[in-house]
Structures are given as C-alpha cells and as structure tokens.
Length: 151
Length: 105
Image (cartoon, rainbow over the protein chains, first blue to last red):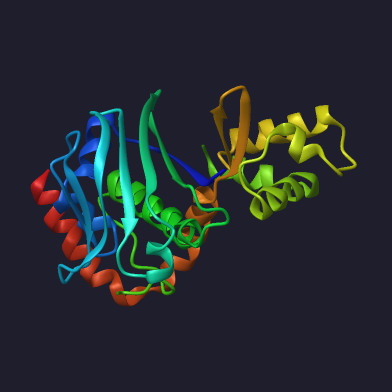
C-alpha cells in the first residue's frame, strides 16, 4: 500500500519551456518561493532541493528521465525528522502537449500510509504549480503566500 | 480550462460531496466512491466527468483500476486571483523580477 497525490495543471506554453522551468535552477528559484533545486538531470544523478541559504531541504536521485516529457526521481526529506522517518518518496513529472496548452502532471508517492510527508507536500504543490503557471504565462510568479514559511 | 468551467463544476452539491469524499480519502476507484452514496453509479460517472473536465479531479490508471484524485490546483488559482491582489507589499519586488525576466527573453 502507499499514499499518493496527483496534481494536474494546464499551462499555455511549450513542452520544452515547461521542461526548462522544471529543471533549471535559475528558473526554479523564480517560482519556488526562493528555494531551488540542483541536479544534472540524468539517470543516477543526485537531486537536491535547497533553501535560499544553501541548506539541503530534500535530496534523492534521478531514476528515469526522458526530456522534455517525463522524469522520475527519489525524494527524501532532510529537515523534518518525522518526515525523514517515512523514507523515500517517488516524484514523477509528466508533460503532455494538449493543443496550445501543456498538461503537467505531478505524481508524488510514498510507501507510508497514512503519510505526514504527503500531507506536508500537499499544501505546497498547488501553490508552486500556480506560481509556475503565472510565471510561464505572464512573466510574473506569484508572491509567497502568507501561510508559506520563508524557512 | 476556464474559471467558468471550474465554478460550474463546483456549483452542484453532489459534485462537492464527491470532492469531499476524495479530500477525505484520495485515490479512489469509481466503485469506492459510489459506496454508501444515494447516487446511482451512472450519476457518479457523469459528475466525475464534469469534475475531470474542470481539472478538479485527476485520474491515474493503476493496473486495471482507474483511481480518482482531487486536484486542488484550479481552486488555488481562484484563491490566488483575488487573495494575492492584497499582497501589495511584494509588487515592487515582482515588477523588478518581471523586468529582469523580460530582458532575458
């Protein structure tokens, strides 16, 4: 058994631009409320989510990658003991072209059931995806929501 | 994927009940969602199609099963559209960022 969550957003952009927005550190920083990610984005490469001061928030490695369509990576929390204790989560991004839009599906799954980790990321993903959508469509990301900690 | 579609999908108590059930327990099959409901299976199928059309429900196949997930992204977009407006303090920083981004294009 496992706990999973699926998020879907439609963004008026191209698969390549969306791919770049999801995988380039400089771009991620603009919509991920000051956090960023570092990875070479190839199979076996390490993956890290970093706070703005450089501390590691989450880490893992790339399991499958097929630019600009799909990436699967392992994700384990590093900054909250109770989340870290739940072990490794699997995160999948899928990009499909849908007319002049791109459908982005984010699937986040963990073996623990119920899962505090999934509960924690569940409040974050909708905000991050809305911010990404705004940035790609209008050139301006969303301000950090009032209830999102600055870390 | 207009906001009209989202509001129309939300403007029905049965559909909100289905979203409540998914919010309670995410990733359910059609059969699971129908359990204990007064609605017929056909009615649930029809309501789920409207929710999926509005992107409020996302589905994933798992083996032979089709699982339904509540997708909160469009609801967050609605909240951001109006609530975000009141965060005037950040607008200056954002317009700087926008200018920077536009130069990069």
